[in-house]
Length: 104
Length: 393
Image (cartoon, chains in turn orange, green):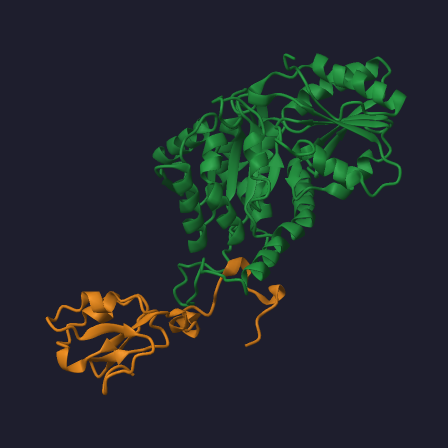
């Protein structure tokens, strides 16, 4: 992507393309562990969606469906906040094979 | 109606504030600028101004309020001094980086330690790289005139950069003077309507203010920021001229006093320049060819213009009301000496620090400086490049 020269920038660091942080794939910072979604344990409480600092919880048709790894930084907050006895989100090694039907 | 009024420096600033009536005034009182804030508060209580008057819990918050209000789209001002300006530090850079045309009256006061409430230039000189335009005033009239012009300069579309107006603590802020206060409507007309560029309150256009830049954009944004202050000289000049046409008192980058056939020159800013003029008059009556150059605008620094004015001198003394620990010389001196570097023929130049913590500088001290200049001109050498005036050695 071509980056602007200083003459092309809007005055005062104003960003007229508000919300363009979506172009920053924060998932590229992830190191170590990543969350794994286990659908059968999920009670659809949406705590993970509420707490995720990067909006990386995938929701489809009003239901939590997994993790968007493009933006997930692997912070683990979703797993900590998951209130079920058997966690619906567990942190696994980055290289680990995802269980079938989990994640995206 | 234009009228003569007896006001001190703080009241002169407050009078200009009343006439301009900015949208938001946010300030935390600190000696010797307190009376500005106090007088504005009284104007507000008496219904004489309509602007929002905000009293935050610190100067850091005061400048933060100014930045928020200016981003929202308002015409904004504050006033402070010394430690108060220091507490605003990080926000000064943000105001400049966001290109917000905030205007601040700074009643110049020394920096602690030791704690001292009197006038010197350590506070604003420390902020000289924060990106603000800096204009200094010799007396109450200039403080009033400069403050009015500051809005025009800051808000000009080619500039859009914050401006601070300095006036010396106590010597000017608390000294009564008869000044010409111009007609309310004429001042309002001169300052004009303020048109914000990208006001956050304009919800029909989505935007982000103050977002993060990484290594790939920060440098470009900082370079683009410089455009404002680099464009400002023509605006400062035009506004100073227009002010003169309208109100009869014209302003430039500096004032020259009895410089026409001068061979020796004293360079000094702000209130001390007034005393220096008396000294020059006495020296002239003794047949000595001494003149004064009083810088008014310190940022942007008018290097070329000052060098042109000084290049023919035999000897120049630059007087700083501020020290610059570990530097080659105090701020005004290093700027001027640097500006003269490109001239093959240039005057001998010497730096004297004076008046720290409000220490008096009198006619006799300027005459001592002049006799030192005579010796330097005679011998063609500067023995000590850096010295002090009225210090117990």
